Length: 430
Image (tube, rainbow, N blue to C red; front, side, top):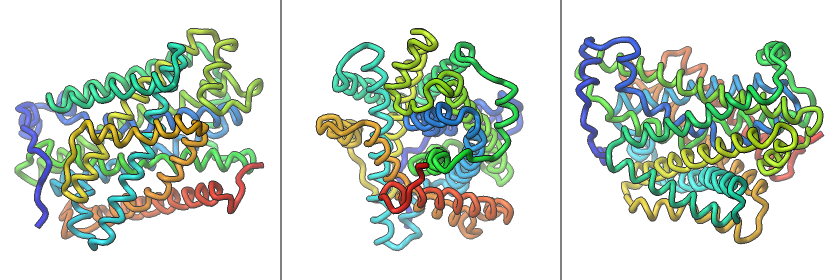
């Protein structure tokens, strides 16, 4: 029998006002907002910085449509994950443990844990690189500061989920405002941007590799697990209509939060296109982008870039640790202290630096690990949300199931291309 192991959250009085119909409009959304904003961090983590910079520097605005497509896929799957938690009262990892064969459960747990560690590699290194460049300190010192700050942020969860959500929301706001400022500094060809953002095209074979990187790494395994856990017992609906109202509010938050994340990703590409395309098309590394921005756009633009990177690294590292904890509790009903979880997930980052491994190469390998892990939660999520015995009247409609399966096939196919390229079986470079 599946037992609820997550702590029961107190229902806020304003939530009951919304469910009773006494609070509507934007005021009705606010009490339920938070989960989608938290998981949206996965779509603007330091791994996205490198991919978006490379896309803009090499191809200008030509790959903006890929960012739009990737964001639509993300909205679909995050809405499914949120709905799974709202309807069943359990998260995705718990349902996998209850309904899947035990050997498969253990395989999924191990793969998902490795994926969480691979995710944290990019996020943790990103924040540390930003600190090292901004304050001219050794990378290891930046990593130590990142470790302390992220652990302190994680402790906020013990004082109520609202404090942590508001803090993460503020960090997302820092990233967003940073790139809004960059758009006023970097030259932007708005007419050309408007023409290319909705026109699918791949300029050459090398562009396929970047497109695969944008789409293939968009739906993050840990975000799918985490979103269902954040919504599983946020409110206690008494009727079917109340549950339907929560789902509608959740879908609205997903659209708003991931639209913001999508706009930030678009701004990253646009900034890189304005700053580097034409004069420095080979810029691909975060360090190189910072060093190149200084003479091109000035110290202010370079500083804003690093501030956004640090905010992204801190917030995404916190979210990655939260997801790892939920994955372990869901799959094997085992809980470890938060400090131990934080230590385990950041060990690969320190190992990479101490062994002298190139940071960019490490980020590529982390994306390969994510590509291997991604099929498990995607397929499980589509299957669970399509089952009437589990979801009842809230199961996927045929059109939603078809769209989810099609999107899953596209993402998984692109991930397969990424894996084949990573292992040298095919070459995506021109």
